Length: 202
Image (tube, rainbow, N blue to C red; front, side):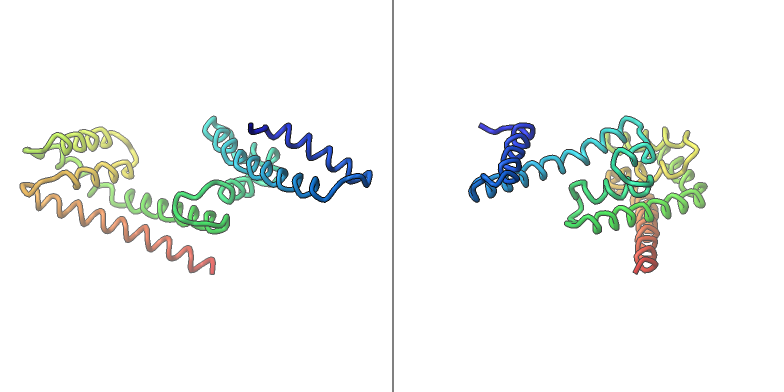
């Protein structure tokens, strides 16, 4: 039967006390070290979960910093990025920090580009709403575009435009080509921003 961290810590503490008293055997010490490593790994896995829960609940990085024992909101966020499991293939904490910063640099660049070209994006979104012969999935994307047109931020149009492109048929080849060009350009803007950030930090 598995025992919880509290019980493990208690048993390890007993071994530590015995070691201080000079009445401990090597086998006990080795077992205590193995148990301590297991608990340490379990507790380390809890920390990013708790940080994520705090953030989801609206806690700022500044408020988290003292609880994490760091001096600034930047350090708190960096700690989280180093600890959280990677879903992009990066195996080290520093690689995860770099990947997250690359992603944010790309997102900022695309957002700025979208806002500068909001008239074009809004024109395409308006044209999408007038398309006929759409499949059910394409119509859903077009409806999402219509809803996004009501938003002030043009970046909200990018995802539904890309989704619509994936559902268009040959009947809409010309319009689909326009959407593909927009998507490719946005991808290039993102990649250029990520490359520039990497060059500045190397």
